[in-house]
Image 1 (cartoon, helix red, strand yellow):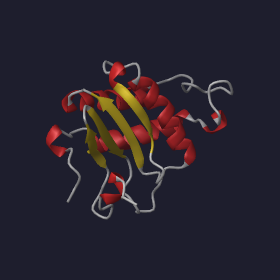
Image 2 (cartoon, rainbow, N blue to C red):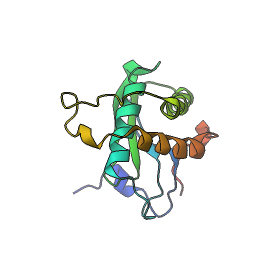
Image 3 (cartoon, rainbow, N blue to C red):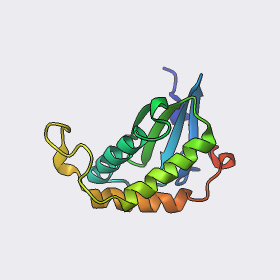
Image 4 (cartoon, rainbow, N blue to C red):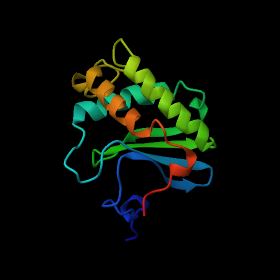
Amino acid sequence: MNKITSFQVDHTKMHEGLYISRIDGDITTYDMRTRKPNAGTYMDNGTMHTFEHMFATFVRNSAIADSIIYFGPMGCQTGFYLLVRGAENKVVIEIIKDILKNIISYHGEVFGCSEIECGNFRTLDLSLAVEEAKRYYETIKNITEKDLSYPV
């Protein structure tokens, strides 16, 4: 069996940040690492789930909406993957920062928070997503394109 790309990254050298995980043609996979791997501070399901609802909705309504392929959590509970077609890294970085600020300042019902819209809507809690957005924004607020490579 061939190892998938994400298993070839040395997780002992990773820390919170924003990275390019892979590029497949015109699709860039961004690793939005909100937690240091194997450090014992993982996202609980409510945090991961609510952040996913909020970020996915905001990004699919952003200036790069037509370029979004996927946004979702990592199974290891240390971050999210954002797949974007044909967008400039600089633009994606700024949109990610703007979305984090939108989540932080959002007051209202969690997007998709009903039995009709979500298969596990009872775990959604806006305060969890807001706290995660605050933590992650502080981590990446000064990030630039040159910072997108995985640590080696």
